[in-house]
Amino acid sequence: MPLVKVAKLDEFPPGTKKSIRASKTRILLVNAGGKIYATQSLCTHLSNPLSTGKLQGNLIWCDKHWASFDLRDGSVKDLPEGMTNIEPLKTYPVSIEGADIFVDVPE
Image (cartoon, rainbow, N blue to C red; front, side):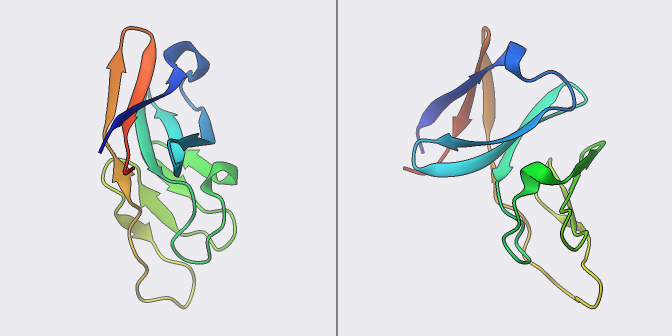
C-alpha cells in the first residue's frame, strides 16, 4: 500500500473529523485527543457517513443508528438497536512527517 499525503497537520486540530479521498480510497481522518486516525469513511451497518457522527474520546459514533467504533483498531463498541453483530471498520496506518499527514491506503 502506498503512503499518500492527505492533509497538513495544522488543518486537523483535536476534535476534527473529515471524509477525504486518499488515492482511490475514501477515508475518515480524525484527530482524537491529539492523535490522528484513519478509517473507512462509512459505517459498516448501513453505509452512513461517519464524518457526521459524534466523536467521543477514541470512539466515533454513527449518527444514524448509534453504532460506535474504536478509532484505534476499528472494533465495534456499541451495536445498533436489535443488531447482534456488524463488521468492524477498516483502519489505515497514519504517518506524520514534518507538517504533513500521510495515510497508507490500498491502490
